[in-house]
Structures are given as C-alpha cells and as structure tokens.
Length: 95
Picture 1 (cartoon, rainbow, N blue to C red):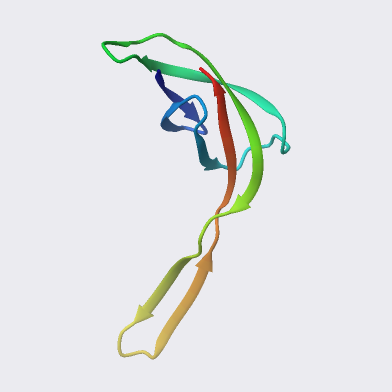
Picture 2: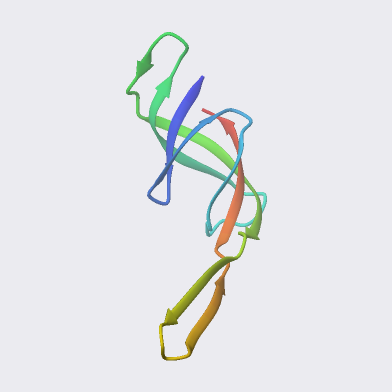
C-alpha cells in the first residue's frame, strides 16, 4: 500500500519502509512523529482516506551545494555564492 503524506507543505508518495529526505524538522534523531495522510493507494483502487502515518527521524544532514551566480555585463561584477539546505532523513514505519 502506498500513501500520499504531507510534511512541511510538501507532498510525498511513500510506502512502509521508505527512507526520504524532507525539510528540517524540529524533532531529534530517533524520535517518532505522526503526520497526516492525504490519500491511500491500493493496487486496485485509490481511496481518499485521511489518516496518519508514523515516521521515524533518522538524522539531520545538509543537502548538496547549490551555486548562486550573479553577473552584470560590461561592469566587471561577478558574485558567486553557495547554499546548502538543512534536511532531515526520515523512515516511514507504518501507514
């Protein structure tokens, strides 16, 4: 069974046992959180059942570097910045 869950205003299609990266959560590593389920999908049908999914916080990490480059032509202006977003890796325990 798969379910569509919502974490921090983002939606993920997951099944039990999946490990996904989500925006940083306030929970500590090892904590168990319940999030709302928007839709549950079986093999034959999809039902709009609102329920809860149980997820476990595995670790807090930082995402890959995104390069932000700005340039103004004919002015010798170039600026290069990097940005790394804070992420949380979670595991879906049950739906």
